[in-house]
Amino acid sequence: GEIGKYTLETYICQFHIWMRTTGENGNPKSLLVLVPGSFWANFVVCTAVYLFLSMRLFKVTVALKEVVLPNDVPAIARNLARLAAGAAAFAAAGVAIHAAAVPQRGAPSSV
Image 1 (cartoon, rainbow, N blue to C red):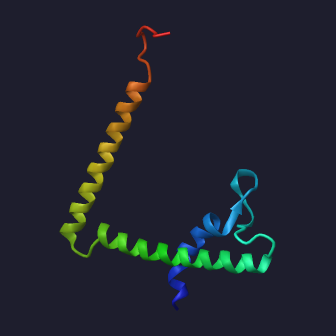
Image 2 (image 1 turned 90 degrees about the vertical axis):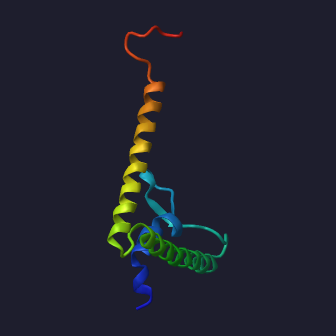
Image 3 (image 1 turned 30 degrees about the vertical axis):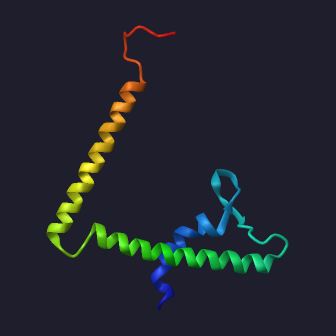
């Protein structure tokens, strides 16, 4: 059915949207409170927000999938090459930043 399309998104969102992480190691312990003082009103509002955002996340996921992995094989290859180039650029930037931030062995200290 219609709700079955959103199962992955509802599973992921339940810990990030619906439940409040207050426990040890970020374990969810209670429902998020948007309407203080009324359990049922809060439950209805939080559940509505949770379901709405899960459905929106599904639509965004589908749109991104069509952009990143279209049905055209040359377009997929082109997108993967762009993704690899972007990852390589970020990795190179990370190495450069790390090299600039970490003092070299044997270099005089500026202290």
